[in-house]
Length: 239
Image 1 (cartoon, rainbow, N blue to C red):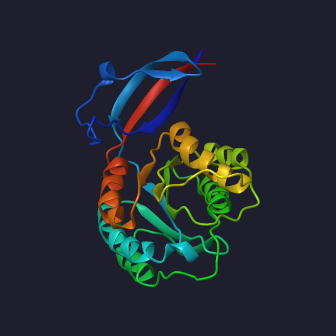
Image 2 (tube, rainbow, N blue to C red):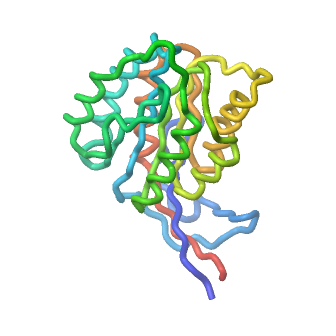
Image 3 (tube, helix red, strand yellow):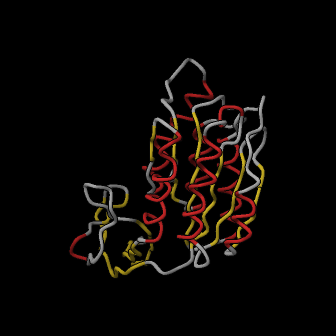
C-alpha cells in the first residue's frame, strides 16, 4: 500500500533563475536515500505564508534603509496572492505586522522600521517562534525570509532546536545574510551559522549571502521569484 506525499520546490538554472516548463521526466525524488515514484508535477498555485524577519538591532544601521526599499518590491511581488508578516529581531522577536495580503498595511509597517540602538539580535529565538506559529496556522505553503547582519546574537536555543522547529513547520528557509559571519569561539554565533548554512539545505530553501547592505534590494528581488515559481510534486511513498 502506498501513500501520496506532496512537496514544494523551486528549480533554478546556473544563473539562479527559476526554470519553467519541467515535467515528471526532469525530476527525481529521493526520500531517506530511496527513490520515489513521482505521480504528478504542476506549478504550485496554493497561497504562501511568508514571514520576513528583519534584523533591526544595533548593527543594522546601514541595513534598515535598504530593507525598507527592498520590501517595497517584495511586497508588490507577493501580495495580494500571498500573505506576508513582518517580524523584528531587536531585543526579542516581535510581530511588527501580522500575516496579511494587504500591501498597504505592509508598506505602512515597512515605513516604521528603525534600528534599535544598544540592542542585540534574536534570530534563533524568532525562527523557533515563527516556525511553531506557522505549524499552528496549518498553511499549505510556508517560507521564512530572515534579513540579518553578522551582529551580536542573543538566544536561548541551540541549533538543533531551531532546525527541528523549522522541519516541523514544513517551511522553506531563505536567509539573506549581510556581512562576513566569521566564526568565533562563541557558541551562540556558531549555532547561528549552522542554522543559516544547514537550514536552507534541509528545508528546500536557499541562503543569499551578500557582503554589503547595498545589495539588499537586488537580492530581495531574487528571492520573490524563488517563492512564486515553485513546483508542486506529488509522489508515492510505501507505508
